[in-house]
Length: 152
Image (cartoon, rainbow, N blue to C red):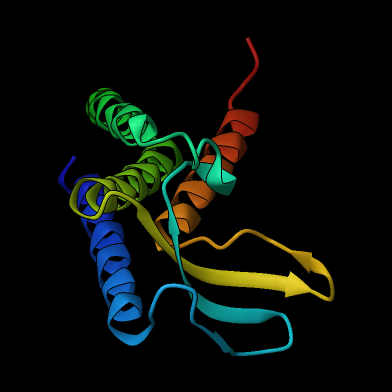
């Protein structure tokens, strides 16, 4: 159980630290072109993925924080019950660390700091952060783990 929580803590630390670096280096809306398809930016997301519900007057902050707290409790329960399932627990650890990273922002700032911005010509992917990347990686691992499970 400790190693899974340690992975979540590492994800959380990386997320908080990288967001701190962006906040110290960029003003809201600033960007730095890194490549022809990638910029570092500073955006604030008051919603969820892809800014879902971002312009809803503030109630969504409480809603998303509550979801993150409940999901974190469920994930910790699942980690305790399934310690022998390595891929499953790694996936949950990545999701937990990411959820806590974004929760930290919501509780301390009232929004989530996004800073990774990919684009191709006129096509733009919404900005995201290390927590979002960890959550996505965890979900992908859950899907892989589910497909590897024997069918009954």
